[in-house]
Length: 235
Ligand code: TMP
Image 1 (cartoon, rainbow, N blue to C red):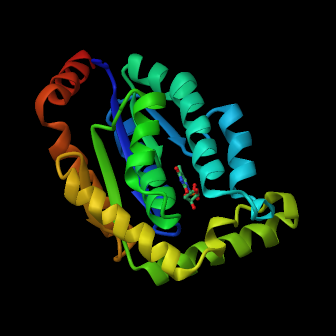
Image 2 (image 1 turned 30 degrees about the horizontal axis):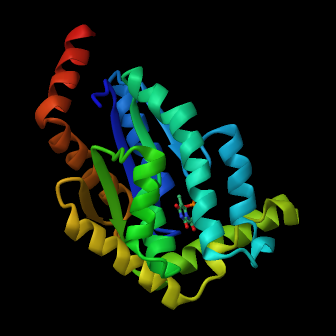
């Protein structure tokens, strides 16, 4: 199905710096006159955010891998319905913090459910919609985990409430995150045209420059270029 907008997803391990980079890119794109929708998974829609709370709270420790996968896709189906598809139809650039690659990496790889189960759900519930560009922020597993855990401790300390806990995944072992990391690299090797691997080990500003270059280069391609030319001409 043809869309007027552009769908860009960001992927990577917890603590790799995705949200900082999404904010910086959104600022650059908005300054150039684009309408930008920033959103995230699990979540994005009001109902999806409720599912997010259930999924990320560490008190949900007993849920099965299949339940986890099903809830990720329930949130995603609502996100597509309420946010992503309308924003694409309205010609927005969507910057989405995680999409189905996260399910393939975390549930398929980390939880060992395998890719085919995830991709089958993606086919049925998401009509195989894929971002035009996925920025996979690659970093060291141990460092990312350390940063993510530190961030959650600070968040908990600041809010002082057990109900603000988004800690469940960060409690997984380093082996779990190493499997997630390997699954991500397999996706990037399988789909090099969509998935761009960005080394995110350096300073945030260096990573930002790499991402801006990448987006500029990729957006010059094919039908996406025409939309940008049109939007620029309309200014
Ligand atoms: P984040 O929004 O801070 O990245 O946290 C979301 C967490 O949810 C992160 O640990 C990855 C996990 N996740 C999955 O396991 N599967 C999914 O499909 C998605 C979207 C996220």
